Length: 408
Image (tube, rainbow, N blue to C red):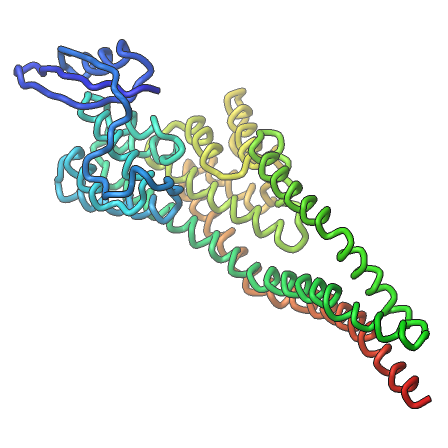
C-alpha cells in the first residue's frame, strides 16, 4: 500500500493534516468523508519517518512484536483509557516510549487512521501481523459496549496466561534439549580429534584395532572426509525446513507432527486447549456471537492443525449441531470435558464451563510438567550410558592393547 498526505476540514471548519496508508487516493477520500471531514488535497508521498521514533529506528531492522510487547501494550492501554486519556493522545505517548521499532511504527499508522476518522478496532485490524484478530474483535466489542478498558484488561490477562503456559513447556524441555546437544557435541569431538590418534599409533605396531574402535574410526573417517557435504546438507535441510513451514500445507503438517511427539505431544495439545478455552470464553462472555467467537479463536490459537479442527466446530454449529457434538467430532477433547460442555449447554452456563475446562487443563498440564523431567531423565540416563559405553570401549580397549604390546 502507498502513503498519502492529506489536508481536510471538519464540520467546524478546522484544518487537519496527516498521512494515511491506503490502496488509492479514492480510499483515503472515502475514509475522510466517513469521518465527517472534507478532503482538500490528497498527495501520494514516500513512507514518512514517524514522529516520536528514536534515532536509528528508521535504519535498524524491525523487531518482531511478541507476547511481552502485546501484554505491555494492553496493560498501558488499560491504564490510559481508565484514566480518561483520549485514544489519539494515549497512542502517541506509546509511540514515543515504545522500545520495539515495529510496534512504534505500527502505532503511528494506527494514530493516522484514527485521525482520519477510523475506529480503533478497524485501525488495529489493518495490521494483523501485530494485532491478532482476537485482540481486534475484543477491542471492537469494548468500543461498542463502552467497556474498552475492561477489554484491554481481559486481553492482558489472556496473553499473560498464554505466556506462562508456553514458558512452562519450554522450561520442562530445556534440560533434555541441552543434554542431547551435549552428547552430539561430545561424539563429534571424539570422532574428529581423539579416535584418529589411536589409528596412527596402532598402525606403527602393525596390530589390529578392537571392533568398537574400528566402528568409531569409520565414523570419524566419514566425518573427516565428507564434512563439507555434511555441512552443506545440514544447511540445506534447515533452509528447506524453514521454507516448508512457511507454506500452508507444510505448516499444517508440522503443527500436526508436534502434537504426535512422544511424551510432550499431549502436553502441547492440552496447552493449546487451554488457550482455546480462555480465548473462546473471553469472546463469548463479551457478547461476541458463538460462531464468530470460534472463528476468531481458530485464528488466534497459533496452531494450524488445531485451528482447522476449531473451524470444523464452527461449520458444524452453523449446520445446526450443538456445541458438545461439534467438539466431540474434533476428537481433541476428553469425555469428561465433553460432559462439562454438555452440562454448560443444558444450564445456559457455557462461559462458566469454559472457565472450568481451562482450569482443568491447566491442572493437568501443571501435573505433567512437574513429572516430565522425572520421566525423561531415566531415558536420557540410558541413552547417555549407552553412548559412554561405546566411547569407553572404543577409547580404552586400544589403550589396554597398547600396554600389552609395549610389554611384549
